[in-house]
Picture 1 (cartoon, helix red, strand yellow):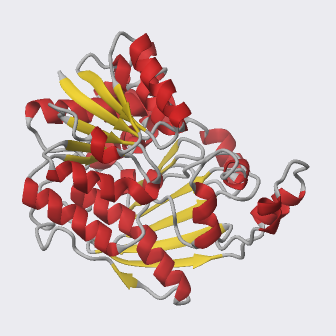
Picture 2 (spheres, helix red, strand yellow):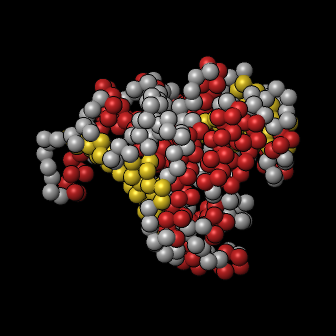
Picture 3 (tube, helix red, strand yellow):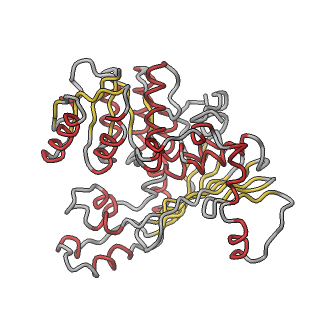
Length: 404
């Protein structure tokens, strides 16, 4: 049994506590922590409702002093992830750190240094690495269905205007981020699966980051339409560009295109795309196009004819975890991705095996935010990605998040 502390009980944290952690028979939540008393009380009550007994804290350092802790689940705001993870690792407490971005390269370097010095397990919890579409495409790539991969693309396309604009009203950290920064502030949902497919930090690595941002008008125009907007909202002048486009170059010769698109009207999509010498996968239509197949001059006709044709490849290529998925797993959070990610952390911790998304991945993927901010200020000039593995990337073996 893994004795765990949960730090951060906002929407994401409480959802994971309720939907994933308290349903995993290998996890015993013995401490919960949040700055806000109402969220803390809700967390304590939920653990009790599920038959457990967790003490509540408003100070994460006190929470991490709980006797016999094996793991800390870090669900707090982005700016605190590294600080809390470092403190936990120095105490020998394994860390599962939720997704987000970083604010300095020093934070990324320190994460790596402390993990290497202490040997404490650390996992960056990018749930999209376990999504059905991304795993199907990765499995097909592993079987050379797309030939030599030359380019991948992805996006975080999600209309967050309400969440961001009402951030201070709802105690959400995104408001301050959009007010004060302009960068690729949420790269890992799309970058994570791409990095795993391209063996980043395991035979390949990201060399440079170049970013470009549009003007920032989406949030301000949205706020003008809200009758209940506060004076703070009305007076806010956001720095975050409505769309940020980022290009990464890789040691293997591949390029990666990322787009952050969260403050204009749209439907959700990660736009995951894989391009190779023998074919492509496109998440927007869940379609596969292989060399020699019928070329269609009309995109609309192509989409109509090939929508969801990737399903015909599932029997041969879809990983077993998705073929055997249960209704309970699908209901656990984000269509099953959350369950798979946290089960992987627990399994690695119990078995003493490498974390499928380790500290080098967490540092590299989050550093994209830092470098994109610098690049945007420099007119899109390429910024060099540090080698957080210190030269070990070219000999570290491939590690997929599940059996392909």
